[in-house]
Length: 156
Length: 373
Image (tube, rainbow over all chains, first blue to last red; front, side, top):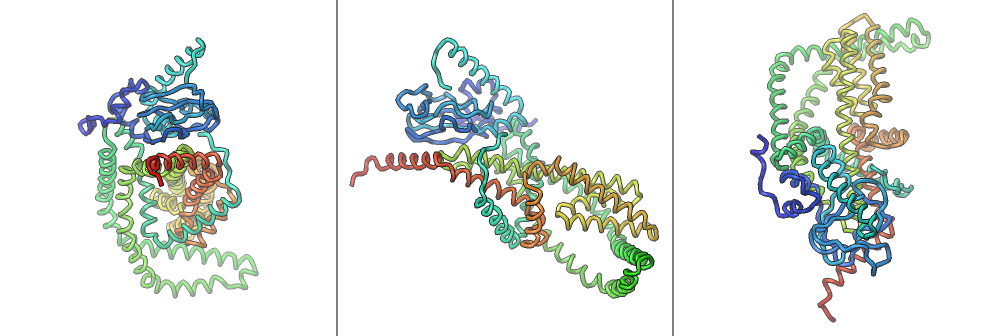
């Protein structure tokens, strides 16, 4: 019955989120719930998103533009370049460990930020959504571990 | 959730305590708005999980806020419709009971003084019982005319202001998340993550405090009601609820609650002081249970304050803003403490400041790239 009151058309940003692998398993209304927790931030080219060693409290999704993942101070040798639809800082959702690399805007970019406290809240209030995201995160991390085992480099 | 390594220094703590006192002083001036705001939060936090469930069920936030608020409002109206006729029919008897209970309580005090004077020479010399009896007879004639009108007038003045509380709760439910995002947008990128963490802590603290307060009130009500029912006091549930709500005001509220219970017991069982003493014993037992078991389980988890600071601030709150200060000082201190720590943490981190300055220079360079002097 609740669905009678639901607004079925997804906003543009929610549609962008739905296309991402991380949220592929979520239904339209679940995407809308997650979108409600997202903060949109704009960064200028070369602006620092977070530093290596900093306490991680949020997870980032690149909506537009490019983000570089670097070792602190090694601006010429980025570990990875992330474009639209990529995400980074995901370990912050899982543990309290410090950031393992620096993230810097490679160009003017728009990022979506999911705060860890909101993700934990999501786990309590919307366990199904959080478990779907956590499963996709686990798959993503597993593929990263396999890549590292093969000796490929990639974002941390 | 892991706490940050930052610890406020003496200067930051002075600012936090000073800020709390200034806010208390200001709040005392706009109490008509602060009290409904606090009641609004008390309504908002229990309703918030229900709204979240509806959002998960596919409703928009606005529709779910409207539905939850309407349901709560209808429930309140239903309760009022059911209880008002009953209250109306019992009003006159309650008026008589009020006078009877005050007389019963005073009689108990006089009897206790008489007993003390019989057994202790020092008390006999003081002749307190005869003085008190004289004052009671004078007071009894003027009590109703002197204070009842004032109390009725004060209640009538507060009623419209208290009606604001449900409206505020509705807007907290509907627009709370927008406000959080609005606040977040005002924070520069360099400080964003850290500020978000501390704002979350603030929300977490407030939620635990208000949800804890409601749980504590329910636990107190149940314990007192069971105890009073066992003793054989009339209307144990109502008396337990009123006493538990009075306990929201630290110390003063508890004393008033105890007095209320003793008044009722002394009137219900005139001449049997042992029942009154059992009620006092029950009250003390519940207070101990409250302080050592219920409080740490509910509110104590939300405000991580040193007990000495808690007691001192309660006195300061009372001195600055009276009874309202006693009630508001702890939640307010909790909020100011988190805000103070947020500002302290951000301001004292040189790397975050440097990143902010760098971002400002980047922005300046971007907007002036085509401007040549």
